[in-house]
Image (cartoon, rainbow, N blue to C red; front, side):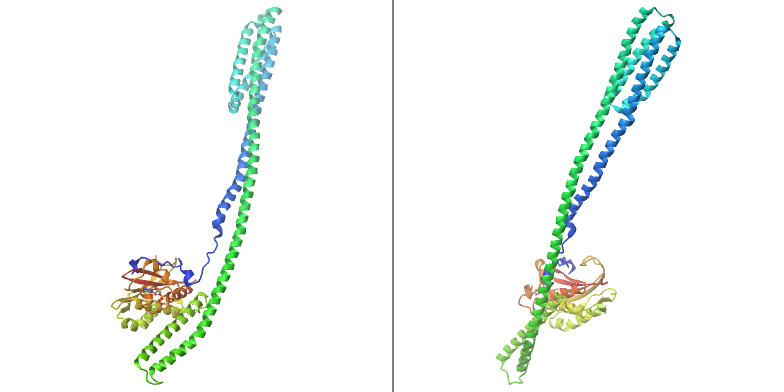
Length: 485
Ligand code: ADP
């Protein structure tokens, strides 16, 4: 019945039905992951953002120290050279002494040397500094051109009055050069001021960000702390509930054990008396009374079965079923279970047998319990399959895609050609007292067999699943782990 679609996923579960209420364990990371990620990011930002801002301030400072200040030095050098040039030219014009001409030439050479670094520094400073530097260059070139007009005539200097006129012109051109120099100086100061303002803004931003991030981290820490407290409360609550459920299960098991004990004896005695009466030892029994006695016997038998089943179920729920592990030959166990049920199958007009299978290793499990489960599955298959049908067992070894959990399993399937189980019933039938269709009244039973079987299978580390197709039959699979943990 593989094609019937698998509907009973182990562990998916009716555990609440057959194994008592199961409390979802709290998953601590689910609620705290987001705030934790937030705290993590906030902490990273707390470190990274101020560092980035500090780095930016440092590089701005470097610009001031490495660019603006050297630019100032070059401007000062040019100014100093110009002052020396004008003094030398004046002295030369007045005295005609070539010593002054040499001084002029040296000062001019120093001045010229300053332009190359100044040009580079001005470009790095940006803003209007490069334009001002060019203007300075133009003004100074005018000055030099003017000086050049004076020099050829220097050897034949005019009288003092004529020299004064020349000096006045020269003074004006020189002043223009100085003005250009001052203007460049201001513009360098302006560039420095822009950078200082940027540093101050960065520092303010750094402070504000640090405050915001500290507040955020604080907030997140509070949230995480509150979540932690909540988690502890939830865990305590869950633990309390678990203990309550355990106590409840145990007290139910005790009650059923007590009841079972108190009921079993009188029921057994009633049954014995009925058998005695039926046998005619106490006198001949008329046919009408014999029929009544037969009913009493059957009902008493059912009640005894129910008491036994309930006892088993609650022992399984309370984990009080004894498991006696040992090396078990699964093939032999399946064969035994089939043989035990063969008479019943044949009486019901059914074929019964084991399908061919590959080699099956021995497993560490409780053979008695396995036979108990298989007996229940086989007797159900016989009970619910109409005459002429078939009940077969199959054994598969290995990790199967249909397995309850990852791992290596032995899967024992009990397949019948019975009425099948509708999809909406496939999980419910593992609950206590759940019967439907033929099970609900027409066939004898208590609705406890599957609940007990699944509880035992889980105690063995395995499970039971069902696949079925209405009208074609069902396969109940007992999963036994190849390696027990
Ligand atoms: P019981 O057989 O005593 O009723 P179970 O727990 O063994 O109790 O089974 C619960 C119900 O599941 C049955 O009443 C029946 O309706 C259904 N069922 C179990 N096995 C089969 C099967 N092989 N084919 C069809 N229905 C089944």
